[in-house]
Image (cartoon, rainbow, N blue to C red):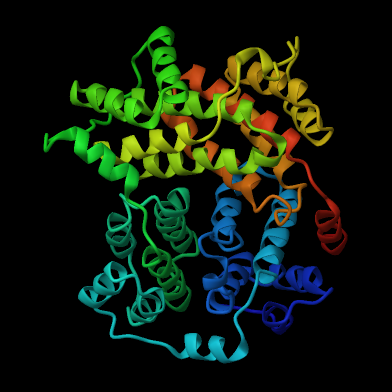
Length: 430
């Protein structure tokens, strides 16, 4: 592992030379991989996670999104986006030097029975320390941790997402020992934070001890049947929605159809989002992508996913922005429309590309647009949602793909903020 001393210094105390140090680090052999490893190792114990409760900062979380989107981006765009995401992580609120020293030195015995006890008794600091005692966390360890958080929707599902994303980040960084312990410790810390099992308990009550498993099968319902479920998810109250979905799952509805209905409903909610709620509403895609990646079969998980989508407001259809019909949709024009804050035109290009069988091209155009925005401005919701769309796309029928891409195009266009940080990164990158 090769780490440039300037990069280490900037992670410890960031200055105006942060992007110059990133360039120096990226120029090393395996520089990107080693630079992200070092950032995780240095920043996880420094960030004041307690001060953010009941929320979770997205600097570290967004790193997985950037590595997930790398195949969709040119090298310049990838480095711009990764550098600004690392800048966000390095500037998140920090613990005092005394607390940092205690956390950095904390190390438990690495026993699962202890870790589970600390999670169940809601002692995040002890859970983090115990996780540092694991010699080398494996994928199975992250999965076991995720099972402890499956039914906990505190901070709208962040626990499941963090277990999933940090496990994936660990794999993408090629499972380094010290960095892996930090990632596993952070996942354990979040898992042990205050819980919320309200939606899961509502679903369990309506299941009435019935042994129901949601089978994974491709979506097969027609447009009318899916639209009926979208109306239920968007318009019913939580109790009625839970009862209706439980009935469908008891009758054998599979994951493909359920996911398609949820994505269609989430896309409608995204169209109804106020500009100040664009990013928060896009979080539904992030959670749904984690459910899909986990291969969830527990009906309670699907019910709480529906509860999350239902949580956001629904407006009248006539009040929504509508896509402009575009005779010749293109990826370049889609990126330009997003950056020019033209949501209707961006939706037209995204939908047109999807209908032409070019959903991946639309996704890449949205990823490119997301790299131009300062992630601090939108809490990294743009890169997180586009990475979620990349995860969801293979699981969805064409109609749901089109709706999701058009909704994200509208969200990104309306969510444009400052691009100054990206321009500073571009200048350093040359």
